[in-house]
Length: 326
Image (cartoon, rainbow, N blue to C red; front, side, top):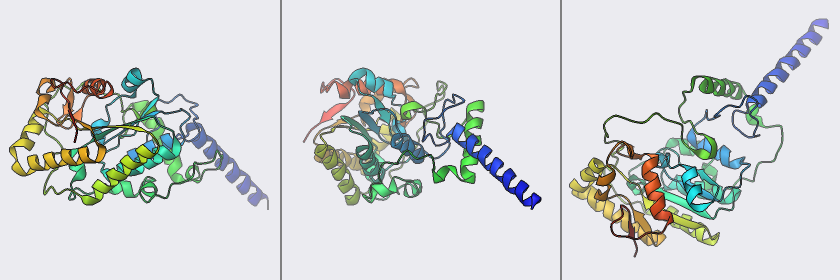
């Protein structure tokens, strides 16, 4: 009997210590606890990270950025400087319209945005470009199915925190903050990790336009995204993703891909009524490591140019981005 008592008391003590450890770290950033003043808690995949950041946000976000990893380095401070809106960057890797509609529904279920900034990549409407499998295992999948989950209650019992995975992720949070190295590292407001300036050549990356065929299903998903924004009176600003000059030149030199690019732009104009086109050879004046990290990932400095044009509603013909209308 004495052994059993000691066993249960010891078990209870260890359990209490582990839970205290997990909650003090708050690895999924659900309670806003940051006892150790860590810079980031991003230890899971991007979709889970940003979903949880929005789901448990204490801030009143009025503007959101939606896009692929090509929109990672669009900094929310630059949007706020031009609009005055508290902004969240909801860009994640390897996205398609399945992500975009689900993200839009999630945003509208959690916030009352005034503005959504949406960057669309050429590959996104290709029927032969597969949706990332990580989307289907993420909580966003329920929003694609229009099974919007209710806002989580502020309960101190959270099943995610009563797992071995939560212990592992708590140690990961400590590790990445001590070492300063992590994949999928997101900071406050969904901003991308701090990086050293890039000094290498502008390599052509993510040239993913094989067997390009417009997807009717994905066109419908974007149409629904536009309808939801109109229904909620959300201003939706759309532009095509900028690529480096060599990337654009490779597109234009391939007759099938260049035709696909024209169809892509025409479809976006038809859906959204008006877009800014940054997928063109006018990028030549910005073709350096100051503005690009590789051919498909712009730096913050290029996004400052884009935001200034898009948010100031410029349609000047000598600007980089051309405004396209029906």
